[in-house]
Length: 222
Image 1 (cartoon, rainbow, N blue to C red):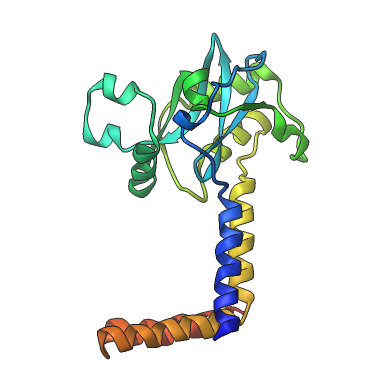
Image 2 (tube, rainbow, N blue to C red; image 1 turned 45 degrees about the vertical axis):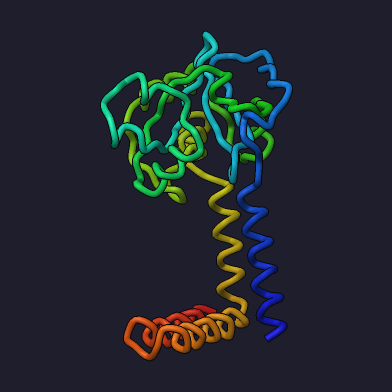
């Protein structure tokens, strides 16, 4: 029992490190000052739960892929154009609605410090010419299919700058998930949770079937 709880806390800690905790713009003081930028630069900032990416287009504007629930709720362009808050973003993720939108550098930063072309050090690919990067971003402005794991803001900028959509944040999350699945203590933990659900909600198909199938699937996957 103690091993299972330790295992659970370990995985929660790992997942928390995958999606980095940041802050709201109100908590960031003083406001960051954007560095000197060139058209086609890849920008990244820390936002709540993740690192956000965009492509600088010049004239103090940034193209970035943002999940947003507001276009689903209204056609009012003034409301949609306003800065996408965390609540709008999270609801957009759930609804899987996103767009590549253009915002000012200040709005894109959302109160955080900006890193410029920091990903160039991590990628094993040559960056395209800055003008080509910017043109690719401009062609994608508008509604776009969204997936938290397979088509997010990092996929967008890596496609624009390197020609291949990849996401290191997604890869890190998937690696942590694989570690959790391969650890056989997850079988014991899910079995224990299943038995507790049966004890709390009674013996029924909705409680018994997951109690059997989930631990069995994890055991086979491990």
